[in-house]
Image 1 (spheres, helix red, strand yellow):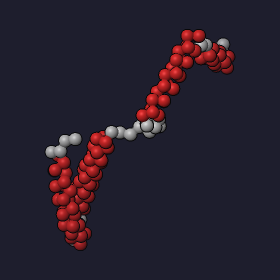
Image 2 (cartoon, rainbow, N blue to C red; image 1 turned 180 degrees about the vertical axis):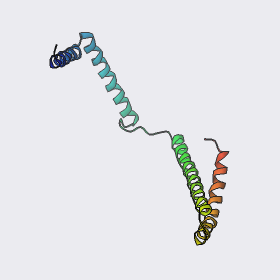
Image 3 (cartoon, one colour; image 1 turned 90 degrees about the horizontal axis):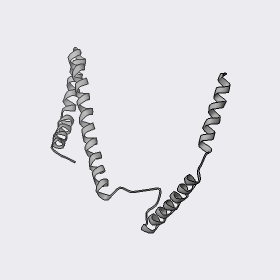
Amino acid sequence: MKKSELKDYIKEQITNILTEATPEDVQNQADLNKELEKTADLKKSMGMNEDEEEAPAGDKKMQAKASRQDAKIQAYKDITAKMKDTLKKYKAAEGDAKEAAKEELKALTPEFQAAKKEYEKLKGVKL
């Protein structure tokens, strides 16, 4: 059997399988459609839109709290990475470059301490 004949045979078999529908299948689909219509009517009567389902208020609060915590954690990670990079520059530098890196470390220290304090507070918080 040639490759093109095999492809045609497979396509034909697939279409035959997919187009075969028994009367029982048709009845089951009709019953399912009726149930879906009932569900849609119930949603409308309850004031729910089919396309959008809102999360309960508690979930929204939890998401907002988690987002704030994620931002604090990310800020801590960013400043820590900055401090490490600057420290590497300081160790590798000589002369004026070393003094500039030292000043940059001094400037980053308060920001790092604030971020670390917030991060430490979050360690004890549970969602």
